[in-house]
Image (tube, rainbow, N blue to C red; front, side, top):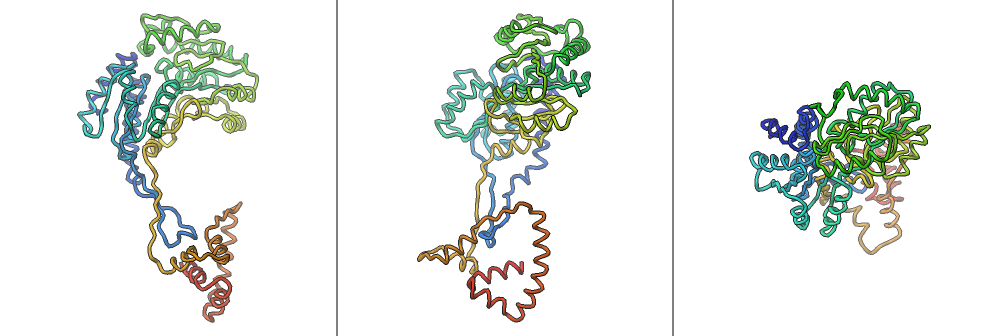
Length: 476
């Protein structure tokens, strides 16, 4: 579907967001195709029952984890990446064996209509449905009982979705918005750093959940950043960015009005132009902080004097969806990674962690719960069913009969020993000791087994059944 209808999808994205073709292909369609390729090459292994290493308790049994589909799942997409966010989770849901109801965002109507028109031509109509509509249709949809719900969108609507799911105890994944701070220190190559930050901010005109949301840096670095940023914006989009074919538009007039209010809260250092009729706001840099996710091309700068002050500033607010650290100081980077809880992080660039298939993508706290992308998508839509396959092994039953009444202190002690979990502080060092010890013991055991003395000695102390288990283990 993606390969044969690239032009149709690009046209719909241009109609909804004036999205440039390069962004439509690289950040939506190619990401979807690559995800499918990744899943297809690995899903046979993912689907297999997972064998669990036996313990003393299960040495004669077969512990397994089966990966079952949930059943019928609901996937609700968002308007800012209306193809990717509606359909990327669906690949994982299909790989896991589920039927899927797909609800594209009504705020991007051309894309929703394209998905509804094309999907039935490529997927089984009995198992996969597309439902379009606004708030009334979504409200009715959420009254149905699903086996799993996956929602991407705002925190406000995410709470509504979770409340609806709670009525049926339906598990959910919520991919929500959130602040995504950027910390910069004076060790970076500022020319490169500015380009990478502005790229993350300007693609999709900042309407990306993990777009850089605000910058934390010193006052001296701020002045240098603004100077470079002004030059880079002109280099990319010309002296009048509104005429550039490489800038998206704000999704609706309502969002233009919301973003325009932010411009009143600070000093405009770069940009600041607004054209409500054209759904346009220029790439803008301010010097004040915002209180909620911006979701637009406005980038405030907040002055801090150290990384520790930045950490305190971030941690005093809701957990970020993404964290961006620009520094060549490895100790500082490790410190921030360990001390700032966040959904994900890219160091010395922006957004790239979301494009690595092996990295789960998701939020924490107000920025969401659960994760997807690659194997994480498969795991999200899979129930792990724990199974233990036992048999009628005589030795196992000789040990197992100690659990039956009448109970005794002797059996309690024996069973406690069998069920005990052992933990060692240094398993690698212990393995060397055990290998050496087993080597010495094997010589002694081999000699004593010939005489039968060791078996008799052990039988008198721990019982013949335990001795049989011990020597069967040694033979293995």
